[in-house]
Image (cartoon, rainbow, N blue to C red; front, side, top):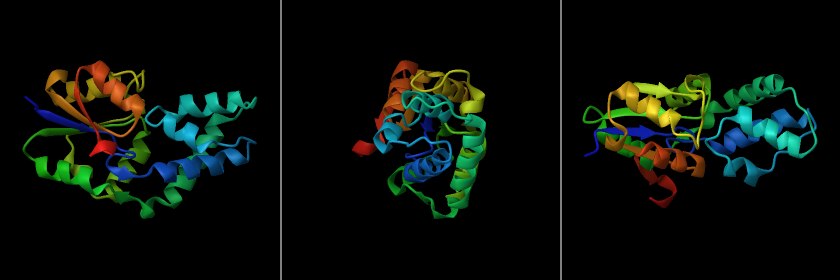
Length: 185
């Protein structure tokens, strides 16, 4: 019996993946790194602190990740007003408000996740929001979802996750949670 719903943010609640890709692409150009779009999407849900340095290393580049992250966040925030809801997923959350416990569990940074949820006007719908700063291990590791379930005080097997990326789907499976791939809805 499902007692809680856990939503990924980027690409699940918020149509933001291209905005993230564009912001990273812009931030990395000054450091001589070209970001492959398919590589970026393949690693959706995995924190950028792992993905971006790994990608740069594959190109034989060493980057100043701190500077790249600051640049990326500014590019992203400059266009945040363009972000929209993913309607069919947000509708699910709206239909379950005040009926089931709900959380957001994201590989994104707290600042950007909060700003996106505020932009699409759903911030107060969730009892807790877990971001990459809240766990040591990240998707496809299950920690982000297990942390959300713990905060909601619901056993993992009673949680349903909504995800759009392979690392997140794998993380939900490893957590022992039911998972809905929103790309197939």
